[in-house]
Length: 261
Length: 300
Image (cartoon, rainbow over all chains, first blue to last red):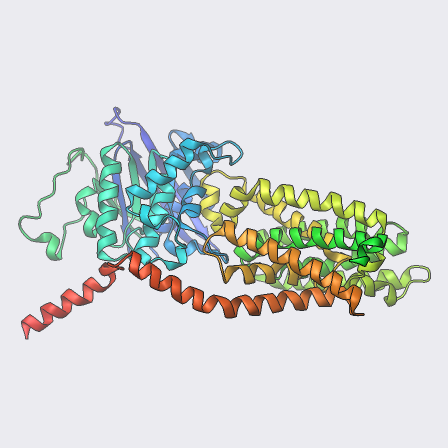
């Protein structure tokens, strides 16, 4: 393990994590550490296990072996969920009854309330989260009237409203229009600047690339690469697209090969 | 207003109002989590309770409450563990519950399917004082849960996975929803009957959705519709010799159709207002093909 960096605590720590969906092994011994303040992208093809990995972290997929710790506490005993903001893949959040942007975002604040009673500070937090993602003017609109990108911004506001220390996002850029992508990248940049730790599943680095400290590439449920983001191709490889990674411990990360099954 | 002078009508109206409030109040969460037919299933299971009540000479209302609460907990457990075979297990539970009811009532001394009819389709005029007491107590429980825990129930019904990650006790809240739905079924049993109860849980919510954009407004409008149709259905059945349960359900569906007809121009006006309020609309969605189109044109 990378014990050389003792100054920053591990916010997420996965050791030898295995998981099956049905009889099919999806994770085959994942080691992954995310330290405070890091922005880590989980990359890989469809079916490589990246979504399962983060769903394992938040306890939505049972693991068959290995250990997962959140803020140094074994996941099974972790209760302080207001420290974690989760942005699921957009398809999961559709109810059968209309709901406004404010109502959806408010549900993310419940972890900070006692018995679901909202105080003035909670209402203020909801307004602030909506301003962060540029949706304050749509607060009273039904989420059904929003575009895909706007909907995604609402889900991110719902995760930010509890003022989490760790953001976990599953494909936040999937199906998001360009304007919303820029707003999302800006929101994320502000969060990272204020010290939020981020673990996100991405299909491609895209507009978030400048923010990423480290990329972990999965293939067939194993870690294929853990280090600086893979070499960019396309327009990101053009000269002038030089990225600065202020807290990337360049060269200190060992590249892990996938464990054999 | 001479019907108010009769004690049986006073009891009937009180029961009707309580059903008008509670059925949509629970139903909205069932509709939100796309389990609109759960009330129907619980109604089937409750029949076993009614049958047992007759067989053991206990209050059919309380027996139906006990059995349908058990049944709803079982349904929730099947939903957790059932996976792909869950719907088959639910089907067996529903029809087992119905067959059990018919069996028990025929085993009861002097019992026949005729006794079941008043529970299947409601029998408002025979609501007794002890029925009213039971209905009041059960309705108080339903209102307390559906209003007091509305933020938690909303979060769980909207996005269960997210609710779990916010640390909400999702399983407990799901069980509570199921139990509350079961209690509502038995509250409504005497008014609209077990076979029609699901209509009062679902249709007012569907009607309210035609007018509302928010969950809170949907809730309020659905309850208002529920109370309106149960009261007017009960009064109609007093003056015209028609069964109250069927009248109430048909009125609810009429309300749905009327509001749908009303809402279409309303939605159109809202869309126009929204377009005016956000003149930019969603330029981003169109920006990609637009710029690409411009580029293509330049290339040619």
